[in-house]
Image (cartoon, rainbow, N blue to C red):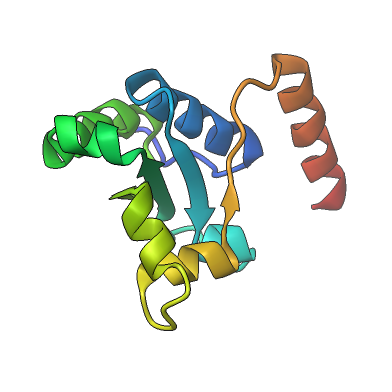
Length: 132
């Protein structure tokens, strides 16, 4: 039995990951950080995503359970994904701490927008091919 190779991480895939997170947590902010956000990712690099939710959502949901569901859902893309889930108040409190991962995500990262059309995805892939 052969296994499929890992998917290539591109902007379309990143938006798809964010969209699937939004299916589970519609109000979430999904922030890409780490090597893929900085542009120095290697083929073996994981995709680091920080999910920020409202304090109310965080208080009424089991974060570990939701993260488990998301990891299972995103596994079909065959890319290693590291998910962090924080309530908005903790993000605001720690985003300026020098050594905290939340600060790193805000310093080096960017919010992944959801809802772009397939045409935009195709155009981005064409642009990426031109630059390679």
